[in-house]
Length: 147
Ligand code: ZN
Ligand code: MN
Image (cartoon, rainbow, N blue to C red; front, side, top):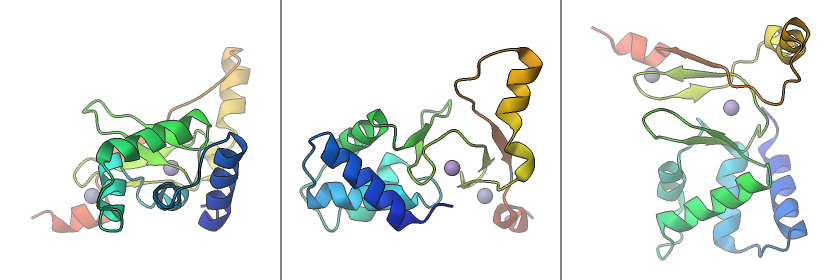
């Protein structure tokens, strides 16, 4: 995981460079995205800040995420059920492990996955632009809950 403070500064600077105002609401959204603990959904982010910004709507959070995504500073993880999750801590493609029960999502930190893109390119002679690699399973917590 990248230091969230550093990611926060990078995203804020990029917004500034592109001429976007840095409002307190925007800062609150960027703060959560820069950490992206458990890869939040738009609703998760909204839930975390609605108390501090009671006039802010879910649509505002969504628009901010779309903006930050357009700057390449957040990775969007789409799922067939329509529940998109976000990673602003690591905005570049990387593997994820998804719990099919509680929807927890973590970043596996495996050296064996580092050279994957290079190996795939070599093997297929493709110029690789992007990748998506998800592992689905049941997290430790959900396994313990099972009766
Ligand atoms: Zn789980
Ligand atoms: Mn991630």
